[in-house]
Length: 240
View 1 (spheres, rainbow, N blue to C red):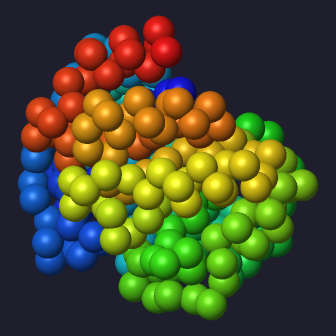
View 2 (cartoon, rainbow, N blue to C red; view 1 turned 30 degrees about the vertical axis):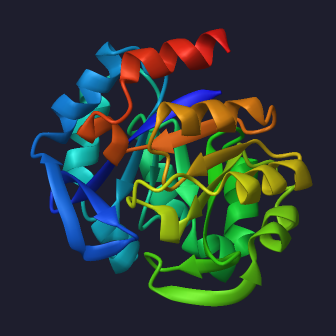
């Protein structure tokens, strides 16, 4: 199982939100590129990036910070937030991003997901963010009536690289991920599922790993707070 350290970008800084609330942001580093380099130096295989402003605006806002990160690291990076048209997808991939994450458009324009996955094999993931099993969009500000599993199954034949499942009520709250829901989703679809939201301890990582079906886990606040020792976590996931 791959551990994806998270760098959430707000106003050019590396922050973490509490349950997706923009006014509940804690700044952890005002140099996101240096933070990304530190994760790489610790042995991380991937870096997970989110343009928080972009998720609300519907277009890239923290582009300069993302480009600085891409210039600073050699490991692959994936990015979500404000990516809602083919031009933006092509633009990011041409700048060295390894994978784009499509969230809102997966609900509002599923044909774009299929088109992008076909044009860029292995470089398009779908981000499914949910409250009580129902998908939320536009920076988690709008909830839909669509169930996560139903939407995930709709993309099984599209050729997407991964599904990133976030339980919004767990995100940034340090209360543990929704392992049961994430495992159920991973067992319901053939696409690799990455867990996000609430991954806050070594125990969480081990339990996710031990399901045997979850492909990765994203963690942010716990790494910044020191609740998860990054080197120990990477070693445990590799040997496990």
